[in-house]
Amino acid sequence: MPPSDFTDTNQNETPSLKATPNFLTSPVNYTSHHVQSLLLKILKQGPIPQHIGFIMDGNRRFARKMNYKQVVEGHFMGYDKLQEEEVDTLMELAKTKFIELCEKSHLVNKYDLCVRILGNIALLPVDVQDAAKKAVETTKNNTGSILNICVPYTSRDEITSSIKSVIKSVENGHMQIRDINEEIIEKCLYTYGSPPLNILIRTSGEIRLSDFLLWQCHKNCYIHFVDCFWPEFSLWEMLPIILEYQLSHNSLKEKRSKSGLQIASSLS
Amino acid sequence: MILHFVYLIYKLFLLIPLFVQRKPKTPINSLHIEQDLKILDKIPKHLAVLFWGEINEKRLKEAAQLCCWSWCSGIKMLSIYNVEDDLKNNAQLLQSYIDTFSRHFFINEKFIPIIRVTSLCASTKHIYSNNEDSSLPDMQVNLISYADGRPQLVEVTKNLAEDVIQGKITSDELDVEELDRRLSVPRFSEPQLLILFSPKIELEGFPPWHIHLTEIFHIPGNSDFHYSIFVKALRKYSKCDQRFGR
Image (cartoon, rainbow over all chains, first blue to last red):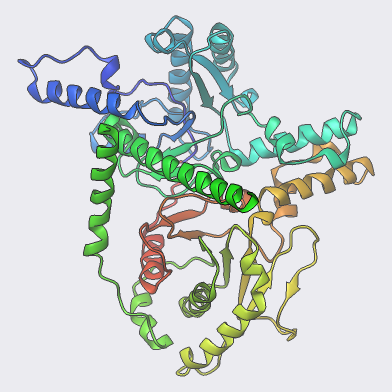
């Protein structure tokens, strides 16, 4: 399954975006909301990952599970084996969501979101391209969080495109061959400008990367394959992931400071 | 303070499965494996395993066992990755462990398969082989390290840049297929399955280009690579359904 966008359009929105449930009308939701808020407050004391990637997989299977008549969940597909009708519906959904982002959506406002589109945008229908470009233009000065929407995207295509840019720079005399290194290639990737990828999450229980962020996740990144469909993914699935990140981050920091102490004592 | 308490509870919770795990016995010869492998619908042609931590004598013996189990399963190519070059530096020792282990393990087979270890060297294109025998091996074992990942992509970029300057290829002709041809040298193609047994799923610099569609099987909480990890991974793989666009 190719990677998908991260527009929070599914029904399982994070509790902070919904109105606080009432204890009398829904005691379970009320308790759940407050436990989640408490756990979030506790976790905020520790290190927080700066960049998380999502492969939002399992929308179609979720729709089948729920016996929906049509699969109209918020994700983008890139492969041409899909039915033409489904592709058209998805493109229409994409356009709608891009327009929503432009028109001061609650997400953009709450998080001061800067929207970026990563991928070979020229492959999209013209009307979707226009809506996407407008979403990027409208939010480009926002400095809160960055939302990278990967469409239509494959990692191999991204790496190839980056290598091509590097080679063109050499061709035009802007760079020498001997200057080519990992940092240069990284600077030409679509994700340049975002912090390093800390966590990559794939839902639906599939255990492969499906050509998503291969360069970015290959080191210093924790990968999680979560066994629920994307529309079912909630804060309860997210919390242990953040917890594990904090545990690993702390033990890595300890190791580094221990090796620093050893070097210091061997020098003294 | 509360945060550290939460960390402690969570760490204890993660330890529970380790007490419950039941490990099957390590097979002594190839007949023991047959029962476990009979029920598998599909086997990866190319298996990769990430050996984390220090490469010592114990790890090399585990790698030698892995080679023999893999051949029994019908796997044609095995790639073993360690982030440092320690595996590559011990290629000859690994080959001798494989040869020794094979003599006992394949005692019931009609022939002892030729399992050949090769260290891929990214900085030059030369491939070092330990076995002077020029006949085709029954199974190829590649030893790979960090140098075969991003640094190899950098090397290919430099070579491509030279070719473009010399007019052998235009920059517009550079596409995913061309890059794939130059990266997937005949001895290191894409693995269908990658096994990890480190505490977390971390690729530690495993060559990124090659794993775009690879199934990644992870079992945490293991300091050793033992037979149960191998069997569970193959069972999981045989059930995987790669639904491209469905």
